[in-house]
Image 1 (cartoon, rainbow, N blue to C red):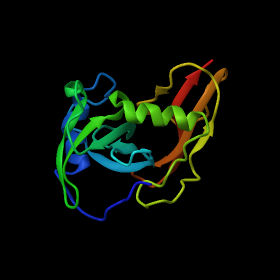
Image 2 (cartoon, rainbow, N blue to C red; image 1 turned 90 degrees about the horizontal axis):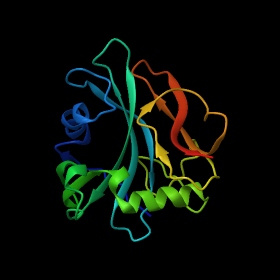
Image 3 (tube, one colour; image 1 turned 135 degrees about the vertical axis):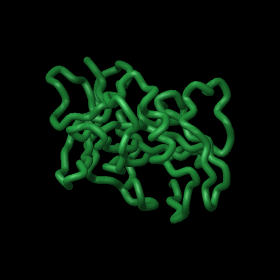
Image 4 (cartoon, helix red, strand yellow; image 1 turned 30 degrees about the horizontal axis):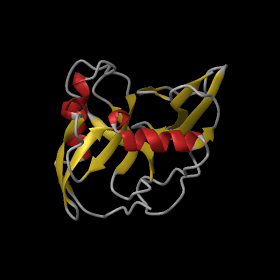
Length: 186
């Protein structure tokens, strides 16, 4: 079970993502993002070493807010061979220095995502320790590689999808949307 600490991170997640997002090929903005937390959930690392978060942020820098799904992992040491996946480092008020990675490149996240899609891992609330997140819906199926959806849109998985993970997020005006975070094709 992951323990959620009520503490600070310096720099914070939004600060790190503000400088990291514009370099991603799927970033739709054309300047500095104006980010806000919008949703997400966590998975537990069975070994208890790596924090796993499926974070959603909205970017309100353009005319219409865009919701980005950014899976992140938090480690107490660098992940060998993943230098290009490093989002940044941060000082955690309880745990000390954390190396924060694009979770799609972290083997712990990808293994736990596969377990989630097999029904053998349970999504957890983003900000509470040991509380299942019942808003996350998993449709198990398919043998393909899970595809993380980076730019979220409201709606169900496309027809013919073998499996999916759907969850909610909120736009800056407070409206809640549900869409596909992860898709497995048939």
